[in-house]
Image (tube, rainbow, N blue to C red):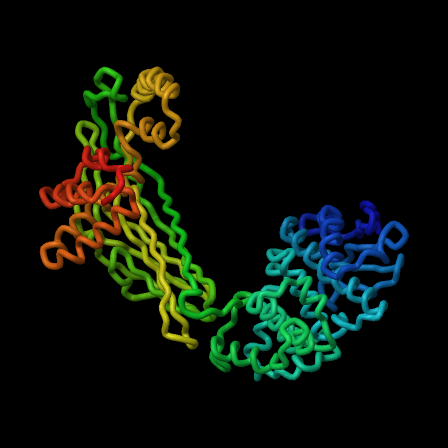
Amino acid sequence: MQTLGQTAHFNIQYDETLLGPDGNPNAISRAQRVLGVCEAEFGLLASWYKITDGFGPDNRVTVQIIADFAAGGASNNGYKGGNTIIKIGNQTANANAIAAGQSSCMSFVAELVEVLASYRNQHGNAAWNASKSDGEGLSLLCARERFGTGYSLFFGTPWVNSWLQSSRDTRWINASENTDKNPLSFGLSLLFLYYLKNQLNHSIPDIIAAGGDSLAQTYQNLTGKSDATAAFSQLINKYFRPGSTPQLATENPFPLLEGLRREVKLSLDPEGKPFHVDEGVALTSPFFTCPKDLYKWFVDSAPKKVTCVATVRGFGLPIYRWRVNGVDLNPPAQLDQPNVQGSITVQATVATDHAAQPSTSALQDVLINYGVGEDDFSSNLVFDLPGVVGHVDLSIEASASERFASSDVSWTAQSITVDNESLHWEARYYTDRERCMKPFLDVAARYIRSDPFFSLVKSLPDPPQEYTRVIRELTQASAQIATLAQHAPDQARELRHAMSSALGIAPAVLDELGKANIRSTAVPHEVPETLLKGMGQQSG
């Protein structure tokens, strides 16, 4: 056994004879990871236990990276002063040194938590005994909170499933089982501790300080109530119906919330490789202070595949539904079917680039091919737009409802422009633009102190897609208000006032945008003069 290093509270050792799949020693890399985190983790965990003595240069804990053993990933001999030992299995066959290091740190935390509990047990506090189910639950909770990735990589299927998919014996809430080897009892303990932490909002230090001789006593110490089993069981059985609960992908399904307290989150990630589709020469000015000249332009098509991920907070077993531009996916996502495929046709604004004139946009039918699937807590929608060249404005909407607990629906939406086309110029165009832009900006900087101003100026004469998409959407919204005004003028007036107040745009500007949309289905990409005049005006 080799000594890697010594810190204020630890001796870190490793078995140099352990060889990985490549034939090289790998215990040293696990030991190095533990050495790098041991002092910070000790400081935090000791503060959670409110321990200020018993450990240090005269009572160092020896941590050994040893050969894997059947009894589990790690062990300890309890608090023994300077003879305290934590043993961590090397995961010798694991060729991923980073993953093995994360799992080693997780195991270190789990065992250190039990050593600290042992120290307190020896000094008159019997709570969180490591040989009981509640002590094992606390050890696992702390390990997962500190090194969640290592925890998931090492254990795989969450322990709480053992209890959720059983007959759900709750007796271990009122009396902890005298073993740390039964997944039913310590799986229940782990789930109950997360109930205290994330449902009832008690911190881990407060939970440790309130520790009693059972989970029910800890609950009563924290809440002043004596209904631990009833309150916990009623909530769990409402959201995770006995006999109908699938394997959860997490140890912590809390909080479980109602109505507006729940939320759905959405992330969008478009990606794709461009390829050349057109080129030519145009007489244009790179910047409004530049003279016009002939420049070569290029148009690339970049068909994007868009990945949308919906996640929830406050749900137990969410059922997801997706809509794109108001059209439901058909077929929808189905639980435990990772890739339900289909296609829909939606109406979307598609803007196209053109070097010789302002880009235009028009409403058209767009075919969307998609694959969608979901697990316990997230849903993934992946789609593309075959054959569409241009900038496609889409509204992606994800909603979620409970499988068992309620019929309430929560939803969220995001707008995205899928850029299946890009226009760019020869290098001389950009060189000339910078040359013309610099003197103007140098003068402007003496009198103007506005970052948005300079950002907009630098984007001329081709505003970024994000700006133009917002302008197009405002134009279309204004047109809809104008249509509504023909049938319900009072409601249209209230809506127009609300939009103008929220956006800081004069109502007259919205009127003009709506009229412009009605007059033509081709909407200029350039910023309308009425909008430029109206931006920043107080709405009346």
